[in-house]
Length: 138
Image 1 (tube, rainbow, N blue to C red):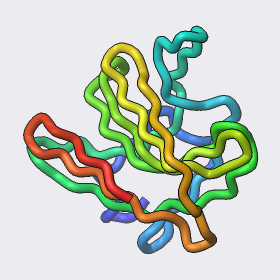
Image 2: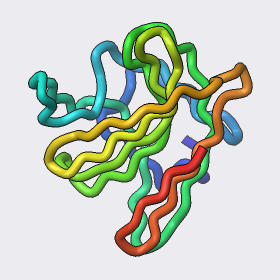
Image 3: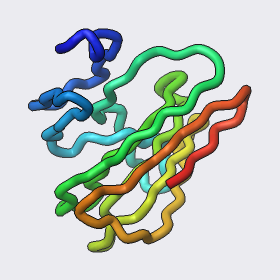
Image 4: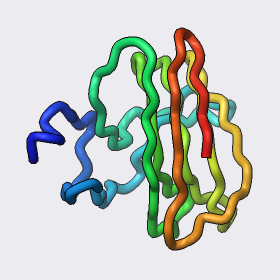
């Protein structure tokens, strides 16, 4: 890990990852996700999350590219206060389509989707925290 990545920590490290100059390539484990207390009883807190602890207001911006093939394949950004309070946003593969997806979890997860073109150049995502507000853009 280079010095620019020294402040980053994995929660649930993936089976394989490699840092580039301005990128990280990840090969995920099977059946990993973040999801809580749904109407069909699905719970997961084993997704791969590379993070840096931040206090106060901030913005994080990434371009995500993926080889989305399997139901719920996904990549994106996450803000996590605890196992029961977090937001994730990114590209998620469901019903054979890549969607922009946002999941807000306050004990239970609430999922929103909008279909967007996810081309070979990826999708740029920005997540901003201002006071108690989280803003997600693509």
